[in-house]
Image (tube, rainbow, N blue to C red):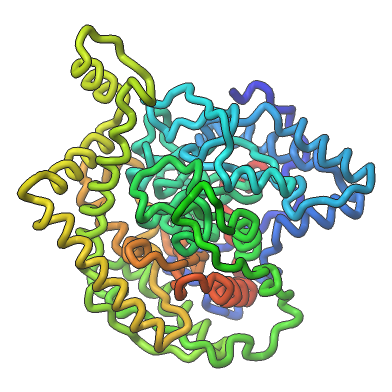
Length: 536
């Protein structure tokens, strides 16, 4: 599938800088006098647009550069399940529009990775499952349609945990993706391929899906920005359903600005999705001011609540320290910090897994070898169902279907599913109360940095516990952004740690403003994985 890629050319449009990690815990929020001086991270979307309009480069040259990097790094990383054969053709169309003096869309020439559970017309869309192997949808998801209308170029389909069920990308039926910061570690999941591809600069931005943290946790593990919108902000039409009341399409970028501009492009009401909102979509780009225009206290008066339960036992000391230093950095920017408690916080994880497994049991019933999915021939109908699903689904998917079916079965519905929904209401009330007193809430994005491949594969409870920081946000339907705030010891040059910022429903604008200012004012930080030092 990579045989159509071009020979190596220039591998980067921007210089790649690396953060120097000490022998101990290193926090990028700490402004030590010995920290290397680096400029704030730049938006790849805006840089690409300026380069194209000025004639400094062409869309084809940019595309060849990224395809070359994919060819060099993909054997090690395995981020992509499929690379599009039309990348250069699409780039040529952008160049032709420029030559004719036609108006360019805001995503013109931007190379975008797409998680494999988001439908792309004529391109494999398998949800990393054998049961959908070779499936090519006859339509684009609404998010993909909007991207193409604005000039974006889909570079390929990224690896994931099968149907979004997992936290490491090890549950893919096809391959295991590695973390660009340390090839022996997981990139997170389930959107691990999308996060790793952005971290390795195989694409400028990417789309993932977030059911319980599947955008935010891999963003933390891979040192990129991960943005989960409010439930209903982005149409789910064309997203293969896992848990319909929790699923959202989210965005990855190397900067807050890139993730925010991609979100703006795909947001809005869609008549094909009855859960999509008719709320107006703000112009997020107005929040992305240059650091030169910041005041001395650019976040003066912003109220920030630190969630007490997220810094208690079970959180690695390095993650706790990086989060506390990030909070101090926000305070230095003018924020007013308080500690808040969410009494229902610990109840979120079991409630999430009951609800998500129950909904997946229902959603995945369509893959029966008759209506959808690959079919295993059998003489009897029940045997056809059994063999098609037995051979098509992986172990993790089968386990969650069984859990969900049990929770919904007669005699257990009230004890499990109904009670989980009641807990969900409590979580929503706790968040509402906390956000009435604060503009945003902050917490770590995960209890630890990226761990070794295979370390938790045989211990599903330990893997599930890693979602404790993120699942409550999905249960409440709120927006959240994760951005790198520091490094902890591990790997060749440290491992990134992500800070999670949570906002009120449909208030992504405020989250993006705070996140952008936080990111642009970090000292001595540049979250470029060591893998790129060998290909830059």
